[in-house]
Length: 257
Image 1 (cartoon, rainbow, N blue to C red):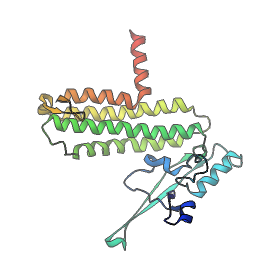
Image 2 (image 1 turned 90 degrees about the horizontal axis):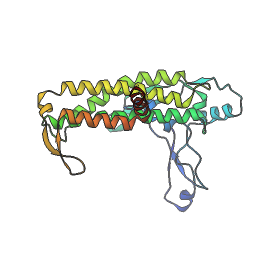
Image 3 (image 1 turned 45 degrees about the vertical axis):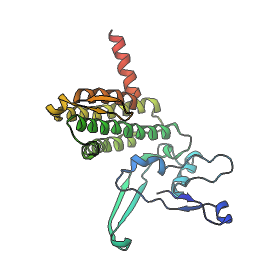
């Protein structure tokens, strides 16, 4: 992936930044860390950049801006990661991931690029809400607060569903795409997927979670954990994570009334 800056120890090294390669995290799909792959915004003042994108990415962006290559062209950046074994001396596995995307995503001030980065963040925020739902259902059923297994399994299921959807959507974007409409469409897909998984978690929680139990929330406030309360928090959190869907739903309700 892209090199990240590390300042040296000597005065001269502190003035001249040293960039080291950033390893690709094979546990995260490439689209979830898309912002680190794309060229970063220019640093303010005379500061050195915090990170550098791959030179081939920078070159493609320059060719796009200067009109050498068509704005309709698609590229397929690929990240490779190596998992080392005993004492980092042997290679256990090699992982690879790639994304098909329009060249405009490589351009710094492209509205399409901002939309895709925001869309990736939308998915992350929605999955976090699903994680909290799973955790609250465990609490409602009398489980330990430190038990994160259910939350992680719920997140894995969500990412498995969203992974193909994001890749397919990303490959369709181009110079004729409406950034606002595209992000709204993506938020609707995330809402449907995460909402369905959330309903399944609530249904599977069982009678103990429905009855619930008293507890203390993160703010130190006394609350009663139950599946119905957890679902209410889930709905509120999902609306905050995906505001474009929530606004559209509210607008429809007002029009119906």
